[in-house]
Length: 316
Image 1 (tube, one colour):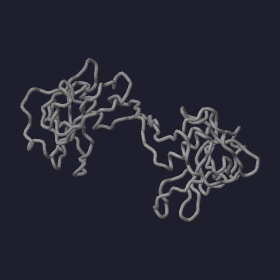
Image 2 (cartoon, one colour; image 1 turned 60 degrees about the horizontal axis):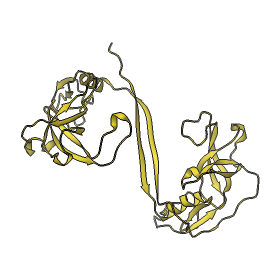
Image 3 (tube, helix red, strand yellow; image 1 turned 90 degrees about the vertical axis):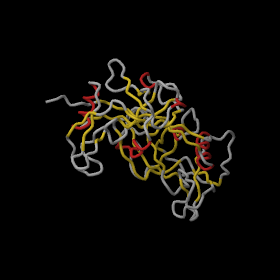
Image 4 (cartoon, one colour; image 1 turned 90 degrees about the horizontal axis):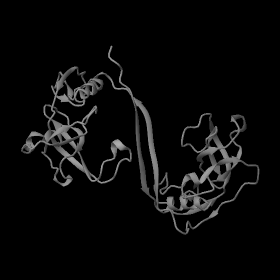
């Protein structure tokens, strides 16, 4: 029996977004130890605030400062914190309705154990010592037995407002290919590219999926394609994707859809060996392998005349 392929994979990127006036005021307020909500058309105070009324869809701008104290509406205990979570010791995920608010804010509660947490318990914000204008400016919630706080209108005006945020997004998982993709990867290790032919429509799909996406029938017949192909469409990448060694590619560069000879589905790959502004639709390319690699590093021009548009128009 062949060895089952398996590998850890990480998808990670910085998510950057600009802020409108409501979110800007909310995050800047956190930096200043102030929690702001927004008033809806029916008088409810939403925390965190939103820019449009969830019922009427009307734009919302009337801000209200709510208290840093509140009530736990529901909770769940986390006995094993993961890396980058707010606390390194066991804690409770809690929904807290701050005094003066009509909705609950999701955050964490620092408690010695699940027996110390209950729905209805009173809590208050523990502010982070260094605040930058992010939800992490609330370090956590902690138990509180004092008087309820009050709410009051707020202009939302602060010095040096936060206008944008960058949030790292990361997904760790282990990928195990099935029969079709496993055969494709095994062939790549031998510097061959294989697809599978649909027994009904006879189209060859690369990479193979194990079933025809059009006909819905299983595919089993392997077909070797390429290695040369045609650029069908492409984009110029101007943002550096990673600082890791194997993805440290100088920008700008071109990422393209390539229809390999004999395939009925274009795959995507990087184009090299040519200035980025000379890549074009119809360009004929071939794979470039590096020593010990299990897949092509990039594709480069073959020097052949460009393919006629009619030869690849169905693969755009």
